[in-house]
Length: 257
Length: 254
Image (tube, rainbow over all chains, first blue to last red):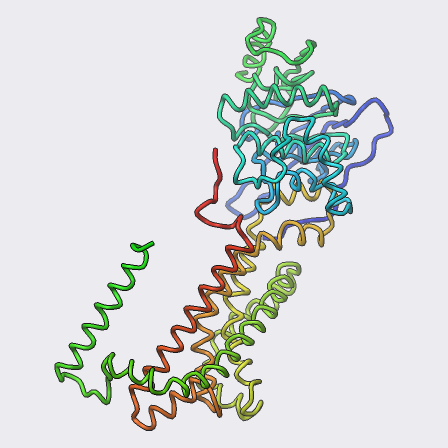
């Protein structure tokens, strides 16, 4: 299999208050063999993310939410419609840290790619590393860190890319329930300290409601937006908040439709 | 520690004991199969001869593996980067392993002379293959998600290779070299048998011709010990250079 590695391409956006505009996008995967069928992953979906807004996308597995994320990152191109926006950085489900590099060097990967020298990159990564509660773990290699700590390092790596838009692909799905809740609170704090535009893909409605300003519910394949819920309360939020519980009911209803 | 040493020592003692009893029982001519005691005395009596023969063979093995590593890594990276090269070169790499070395070795001697060159060619021809295959597997084994991360970070092809793919491939490359070590010793002996003025392979040919089977076996013992030492020093080097790849520690904590 050949891996494509050219630079991601997303058309720049001239509207200043918006981070990304996905407009009526269709994405179809052609059949790979005669026995295979073409898959319509996304069927006319539109999503807009305002600057420093956190938008969560929830949907059943296979609804095309990861496809949508890759389109936003410019890792794929739409078959119809358009994706315009700021440069996005991708954060995959598993932390995927480099096992040979220390936590600090992992966090500073984007700076190294941008051409900084090792010492320079470390010095530049250190303040954020400390501020986000990772101080003391600089020299640990990933295999010495807990799953939660590894995921935090991955988030810092994503932030240090300097990209205005973060594309998070089920970032906490691989963690146990307790660690997941801990990391959700932590991320809520991080986004207050380091505001960014975020597209968060998740299948966890509660996670979406705790973290996002807006939640878009997608239907099963082919993916379409079937509901949109505003979550107008400040973070951090409690999942047990009655208002959130009510929204959760609405989201689950939309998912069941 | 004692337990780790005890098992192999006991096994070795059992094998040697059975061998000694078998030869002593007279079921086989001592000229065909020397007893372990005879081999041991040959090892001691011919130690100067064996030692001086080890030098050239060790050089052939060491330089041959060095050459294989260089060829193997360059080939693996080129094949990994270029689909066209993969289609064109990879079949040839596999085909190279079907060359019957025993038959071709004398031809190489005629071509390249009695010196080091044909030995290096033969050792490298056999040894580069596991290095190419294992390095290629390592290069291709990088998680696709990580490649996507690198792309959105704006990494060039070279940066992705240098920062992600090459380090990921190092454990595989090391496995390839470790496999090479064992076959390199056989390759060097084969090359010397086809025509050489010195070395353990040449000593084997001479000892067989003189029906000095004890000395032949002594040469084999020296070859084995050399291979074991080379293999263990590589394993040690791997642990020092790639502590993160230590398989028992892999996976990390939940």
